[in-house]
Each structure stands twice: as structure tokens, then as C-alpha cells.
Image 1 (cartoon, chains in turn orange, green):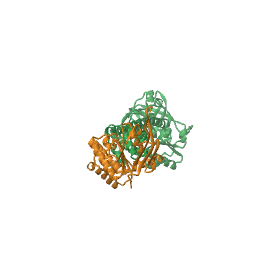
Image 2 (cartoon, rainbow over the protein chains, first blue to last red; image 1 turned 90 degrees about the vertical axis):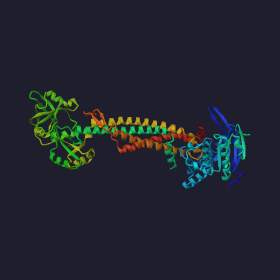
Image 3 (tube, rainbow over the protein chains, first blue to last red; image 1 turned 30 degrees about the vertical axis):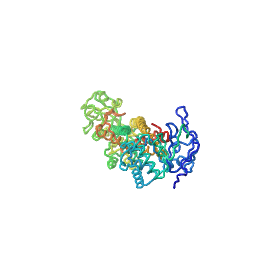
Image 4 (cartoon, each protein chain N blue to C red; image 1 turned 120 degrees about the vertical axis):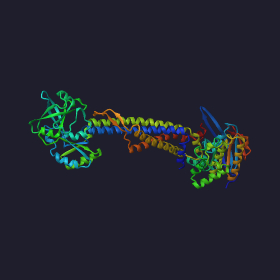
Length: 227
Length: 402
């Protein structure tokens, strides 16, 4: 049972830096943020503001260099690599700007792949995959390979793939950047509806104002800080 | 299972790249397989050439005869040849029994006497088995009465031609002198001048008559197959403890054994060079393939796959490419062997031999298995080296890569 007001993420004083050549870039400068359960949160800001980095740190794609993150009251900083893998596999669904679908698998197989890796039996995972594809309106395209689909359709498959995992949170980075305005709206509307139906939180990073309207809350990030 | 599915489908993902990697593996493993077949073919032909040129598959003497020098060697010759001959011909695997006598003699053309080394052989039987004897003029010893074959140098010194008479004078085993008149049937050479200046061959029965003995010095054997040698030599040792049997390899240490070791060492070096080139080719191709997929790997890692899961996926692909490529390499080798090389490869005479020979590729099943393992193993190793870096890369770095 999830409660919209209970906290899914509590991040405090997050710092993150990386080096490009001899330059040290401070991408996050002491960000603290609380993300409630079953909510759609948008991280807005210009390119290079640090929103993608924050998403990556929250999604355990990048390490927690400084600060703390609690996820469902669990300290993420104390997890070892295996526990992080487990969390990413079962509780976090990712949607990337460039979709990152496996080109050799059909839409259905792409959705099923991570379910198979979760150890879900074939019959159930096929059912989940087909349900997820149906929910994004791609049931008829289930046998198509990514390269046989449009960008919008590929993004829907990526969404279906993230949803089918039944994650606690979906992390989406520049979800609409590769899509035209109408398709972007359609995708956002779909994600919003599915989030409400499935009870999953959604954290989006975007600099597209259209996206903001679909979020419960929007955080503006600039130069690595929430403003 | 899904790993194998992805690995297999990835073969068709970038067909040109896959063909390039497969060709690298195919040609590399094909070269390895063919080269091993060539080595086996050469050594096999060399072994057969040695067997049919000198000793047969092996030789029987009285125990210790080959290792000792005697004042009167004939005291240590084999006296019960008929009994042994009967025994040997009953042994499975024995196809030919060749009695032999070596002795010193003078060969005279009536005007000039030359010191010579005589070989008493069963000319009729040996003509068939020892087919590599080089007859320069006339014909080999068959069933001609009082026929003699002369080494080319000896014939030249005596100024005789086939059909000319010569007299052979020798000490009998009892110490007296004896002589027999022969007619030159042919002139031969062995490739060794010192030998060709001294050697002659007569029928062993006439050699026995000349030496006034019914003994033979040694018995050479022609077997159905070299693999029969162990059983035959064991049977001889058990039945006749006073005799000892030595294989042609023991008898021909200087030429055969040393040559084989020498050739094998050379082949091993060439084999290693081929293996290194093949491995580098495979490594290069697979590295490129893996590095192109960093983002995809980053996505898999982001969704919970561990570095080891990624390595398993890559290893599956490497193994599939290695296995399929190696299999194609083996099939290609077989195809080449049965078409382009069906008539063999002409090679010059091996060490100690006098005749050119044709080497055929001897492609053996165990080598096919070894090649399959090597090709697949090299592809897996190349995948490990190129995949480790990507699999261990941080997820963020992998996703950001272009």
C-alpha cells in the first residue's frame, strides 16, 4: 500500500562532481529533495543544470559521492553493488531519451527481457508484457523490432518496458526530447495515467515546459542547486 | 536461454561486421586445422618413406646384436630363421618377412677388385615393399638367377653395366674363402655417395651360399599397419627371448627421429605464430563490436544487470561467434582438402630420403575438436579482454558514451 504523502525518496545535501579533462565540474551542490510516493515529479532546468545528474544519483546510476539518500526508508549509501543491482532490477524503471531498446529483440521481447531477468516465469511475463504493450497502445506492434518503429513508438515500448517491471519508481530522462510536440504530450499523458493506475512514482528530468503541466510538483534546478 | 537468443540474434545485427568477425575466425581456425593436417600429412609420408626405404616397420636381431661390436658377427646371427619365419607369418598384422645379411666382400670384374659391402636380401619380396629404391639402370632384384644390384659408385668403379658378369669373393663364416659369379641386373643409388661407392645387393640365399651359412643377420618386417608393431614385437620377445625387436624409429634415430623432432619444433613455432595472429584478429573484431555497444550495456546495467551478467551476455556472443566461425573453418578446410588439394602437395625428399613425395592433408577428428576449442576459446578470451572494460565501466559513463 502506498501513500501519496509518505516519502519515497529523501535526499539530503547531495553533492556530485566529475572531471572533464583537467576541469572539475560540480554538477550537484548540496541538493536536498523529498519525493512522495505515487507522485509525478519534474526536475526542470536548462541543459547542464544538473537535473540528469540528480536523476542518475537517485537511480543509482552514479554513486552517492556526498550526502545521503533514503529510499523507502532504506539508506542507499550503505548498499553494496549486489544490493544496488537488485534495487535497480526490481524497484526502478528507467526511460532514457535515446530509448536504448535492444535492437535484436521485438517490442514484446524487449519488454519481457527484464521480466525474465527478474525470474518471472514465461507465461506470466508474456502476460505482463502484452498488458504493458496494450496499455501504451502498441499491442499490434508487439512483433516489430525497434528499427521498424517510429521514435514515438520506440519511446512507448521503453515506457512499457519500465512499467512491466512494476517498479516503485520510474525515472525518465528527457523523455520527450526526441519526440514531436504532439507525440510528447501523448506520451506524458499516458505516463501520468499509468502512474495513477499502477501507483508508481515518476521522476522526470526535462527542460520542456509542456512536461511541467503533467507533474504534481516541479523543481527548478540551476547550476547544481534547486532554485 | 534468453542470453543465447540475444547472442544468436546479435550475429545478424550488423551483418557486415559479423561476416568480418566470422571470416577472421573461419580463416584463422581453417589455417590452423589445415596446417596441422599438413604437418600430419608430411610426417605420415615421411614415416612411410622411411619405412619403405630402409628398415620396414622394424627389425629383429639376436639380443644385444645392435649394441655390440663382435670379432665374428656371424656367431651372433639368427640361426633358426625358418622357425621364426613360420612364427612371424602366423602373427596378425605381419604381411612381409624380409631376411637380411650384411657382409664385407670383394667385387671383381675380372680386371679390377673393389672392396664392398654386400646385402643379402629377398629381392623378389623386397622389390614390392621397398619401392623407394632408386634404380638408375636396369631393373631391381627379382627372380633373376645370380642377379646382383650395384651401387652407382661401385658400378662406375668396376665399369660394368646391367648384363655384365661380376664375381663376389667373401670370407665364409667358417673362415675360408668363397666366390660366386653374378650378373648385374641393375644399378641403384641411395643418395649417400660413400654408401653408393660400396654397396651391392644379392639374393639372401645366394649370400648364404657364398658365406656357407644358413643363418640370417636380421629380419625386417612389413606390417599391415604401424600400430601392429607393439603386439608383434611383444610376441617375438615372448616366443624367442634370445631375440630383440626394434622399431624403425629406434633403428633410424639420426635421420627419422631427429628429423621428426626438428620438424615438429618448427611446426610448433609456426603454429604459435598463426594462433597469435588469429587471436589478435578475433580480439580486434570483437573489441570493436563490444565498444560500439556501450550505451546498450549501460542500459542493461541501469536495469539491474551486474557486470558479470553483462560479461555472460558478451561471452555467449563471443562463444557463438567462435564456435560458428571455427565450425566454418573446419568445413572450409575439408572442402579445400577434397577439392584444391585432392592431389596432394608435391614436396622435395625428406631428410635421409631420395625421392620427392606428395603430402596429403591428414585432417584428424581430434584436431577438429581441438580447433573448435581453440577458435571458440580465442573468441572467448578476446571477448573477456575487450568486454571487461565495458562491463566494469560505470553505468553513467556507459550511457553517456557516443
